[in-house]
Length: 281
Image 1 (cartoon, one colour):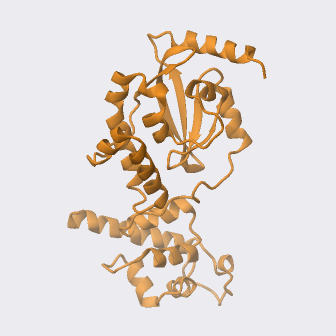
Image 2: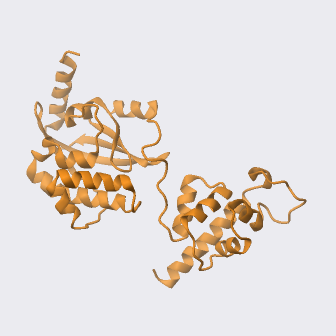
Image 3: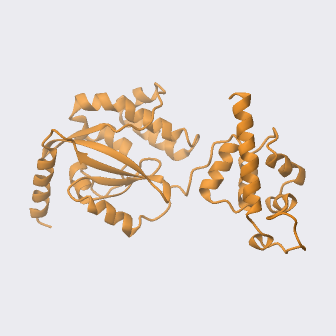
């Protein structure tokens, strides 16, 4: 990183910490108001006491000096300043550290509103996944098209092991490197996270194709790739998949599948939906 960009980051850190300190009053953090204040917000020494760090050290941090910081100390400062999760992640980045994952591992209930949104996608598949690409929820169309049966699923593992995807070998072979590279990019945001490591280890043992791609260390951003699979009843299905971040749960992604234009996938989906509705409960 150039000295110019480093100085810019330190300037941003200084301004961010000062603004977060100045928005708090002593009463907000359980401190007594000690007379009239010439400037708004908490004093630096008050933040230092709340965070359990030295006054000089916190002053240097807020001034953007070149000092050593740790995740534990940044967490303490974030707590003292009552930072929300996105602000906490921003503090980490400004301090030159990888931000911790937002929210708990697999934490949080899927709300009725989110399930309603999935169901509203009607005949088209839709699913909700977490940061590890574990499937949290899906609609009836995704269940029928992808063969989900209620057991825990992971989108990466499904792509590399589901016979319905593997049957479309040419398209699958073209898409597979980008899928593996996108997962590596997501895992890079949380180095050493045991859940990312577990998914990679399990899939490497189950799929030599994935193990080979993972060993290449390619990194890439998610792409709007064509998803193709062979359904035992509906035949060949082609989708354009769009991945959207859930605003209030940024570690979750909503994946929406649209029939690819120029194919008869939409007709086949309607036929599959009719068969599903006609099947005995």
